Image (cartoon, rainbow, N blue to C red; front, side, top):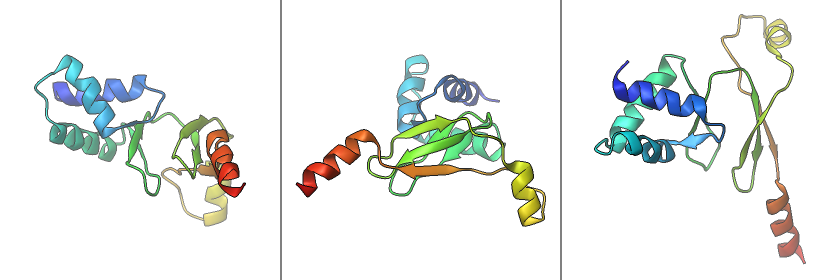
Length: 125
């Protein structure tokens, strides 16, 4: 791994806030002030393709990056807030249902966070 790739991987592994590429770029610039955003995107794609990090895509929001450790996500439909969930691993159950070996699965449960529910309630009043 290049020095950038290694540091980006460390940033993603240490974070629990599902950072965007731009947030990772800001963090990486603390160590490497001359790095450019394209380098971050290229390295994130390489790390994702190599299976070293997860890419979490939510419609209408920028992709976010996460550690590879098995877990699921709770996603607010309104603001895109993303929270980790530790649910039972469903791989075996899902494989039985689909009849083929699974490489992975990405479970995202959609909800409205308190803030978005409050905003929606205000609009309705």
